[in-house]
Length: 545
Image 1 (cartoon, rainbow, N blue to C red):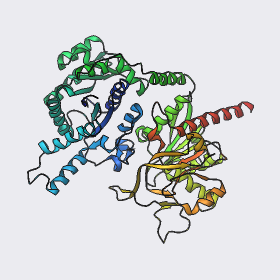
Image 2 (cartoon, one colour; image 1 turned 135 degrees about the vertical axis):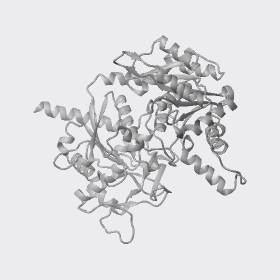
Image 3 (tube, one colour; image 1 turned 135 degrees about the horizontal axis):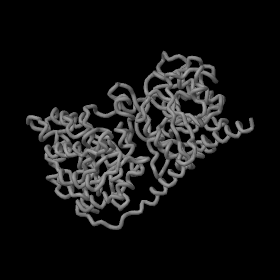
Image 4 (tube, one colour; image 1 turned 180 degrees about the vertical axis):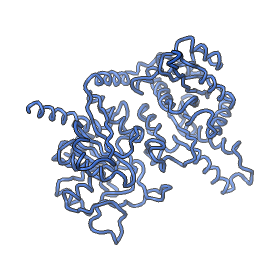
């Protein structure tokens, strides 16, 4: 057991350079050396959490096991390290200020004037050290959102400055920058990196390590120049060149001894370099799969933005690797789907995912897609709202409830409502009831879901408002849609499936949140396998014709 070390990951020049991937890669390398590691994300925006943010604003909203709505980078942390994060792993400026204001209202500050320094910075510092103090991690990696120079980030940078001074060798800063390539001049330019580091230094922080993101290889002269201008040891200037996949980054960082440099700087012994056997095996299998023709899976949703369904895309990609095929995810905008164009939109797709979401926009198109896949026996995976749409479409088209819909249940609710709002579990800022976090589920033996998991009792994460109405359960099962996953405490339906079809499963929960690189989710593995078998069947039929 070592004294907790704190690593701060900051970014400069531009946003979206991949601080989360660098933080995750550092965590993976230290974890491979036997250290107990966790990662947290501090976001400068003033929202309390991303739960009320439109996915177009911030990408997907990730959910932790304890029901916290968090930044999507926590998904990277979990996928890389195989850990479970909690509310303590994600913090926003909104939460910081709310905590300080609540304390002030209670009189905790004994009438003192509340200021950014020391009150806001003290609250940030307390949260930085919270996980280390409580769980005695060897390393706590803290990613600071935004870009150095943003006014919103200043309190976080001041907190880092103070902590580096207070913690001494037990704290270091990794600064990620961008080195642009000017095609007209045929040169890589380090000036933006120099300015970014000067901006960081003006806040009183000297970076210990610089990671430079670039599309082209950085030679020794460039690294030496950056080291000299930025007061960093030359071997602590590392490049992060564009890789085929984000999962290559830990290997690229290890090849440049990033983990060894970190250990030296915090005064820990540097032992033999870990072989990362399972990780490399995953990459080798992925590379082999990439050489084959991709299998196309449609993702039907309303958010035409890759990050809006980040965890689903990664779960499908991981499942593809373990099925030895590359999965090509083709987004299909549900707002544009109609009975007239659905066949063309889903043509050539081996399987279909009906995505999650909130609000009425795009739902009619999801009904169209579900009816088409159900009647044409195409493997279909409905997640959260996707599962609810499966239930409603089945009620309308099979059970004959033409007006079946989802709404709050009360004494005035007409008989045709088949999905109801579940009892309050927690309150969002938007005023609705939400079921958040991990809940138990018991699987029906013999079902496809049970076959996928290989066990009866599971636990999965939720983020939704509506629940299946058990008053219609018998009708559904008699007509062929089975309720094969049930919450043991509330008797709520968690999974529905039509066993007579190749693969037609809907889950009330979000299985994508718990799929990791070394432990892909069993439902996604089963789904992609069914997609591959469906593709083979379609090809065999075509060959006969």
